[in-house]
Length: 428
Image: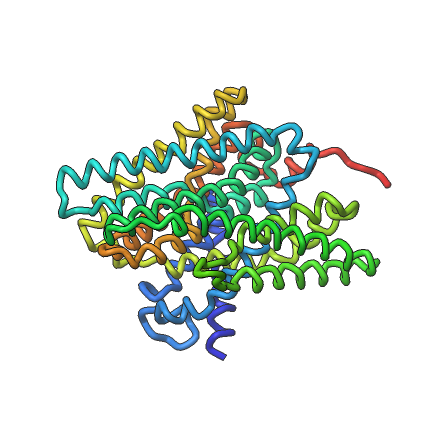
């Protein structure tokens, strides 16, 4: 009973908060996060009224399955952007920008935090510094996708952005695995090639293989049904299946094997959309079905934000350095790689800002990094940065897309309707 009441408060509260955000010209994502923050265990939840808000962090964590499923649908939707026609035009640019900005961000944050270590070794260790550098590469696809969908953004930068955000997950996984392996070696005195190189590559290969198989099987099963509602149900069932399978872990010859939820679901959507001739219509129906799920995802994400980190001056100092140099890395890395691949001036100037949001993937990496000697510092710094990026990142993404001319600012006429009006109408 209490869980259902809490979820109803989360859903309705998030939607009501979005009406206030609309008056302030803020994206709905920001409203959902703020609603979660207010309903979380550090605000209303702390009053311990049963069913109203989330009373403890453990209560929020117990609903993690909702967040996992939402991430699965987000990745499945992003996979729709990897259509062969689009990859022919933007594939080289997306791969170059996706890799270059992530690597540059990692190096820049590494240099800044290692320099901070040499200035005052008691602030942060070298192992934690290089681990945070790798975490800095991660970009949150959820907030970006929600802003794009809310305002019906469309144009070359939007298309490139969604491709880059998807590629960023694979690159970030490799960078984190390698950096964390080196960090562990620095603390233990023994480096493992298996941990640094073999396991992350195996995870990527297994994830792409499982996603490809799931996408092909989904298409074959969909062909047996002609009802729109049944095809929608099959699609939902397969996303739930891929989310579940991506949680499987096993060992082969001492090598840990696992899957990346985002890569598996993204590849499922990519393969399905490229071999299915009715995928466009079906993906639209999936998008409409997942709207309440995404609201809950962001409200729960807001409830997870730990306000206690704001009371630690050490975390605030390291977090400030992390945020400044990560932001510079994303902006300069995107600007330079866009210039090298011949992107327009508008894309060069604005793409980097849209890559700032950071959330679930980074928090997952930080959880792993807690095994380091001062892993608690890493986790708290990431929590602080997520708090900042999640609250301001969606608004910055919106402003950048407006500046690039790919969405219109809302006035008396709804921006969504104006952008829809620009799209061509196809008559069957």
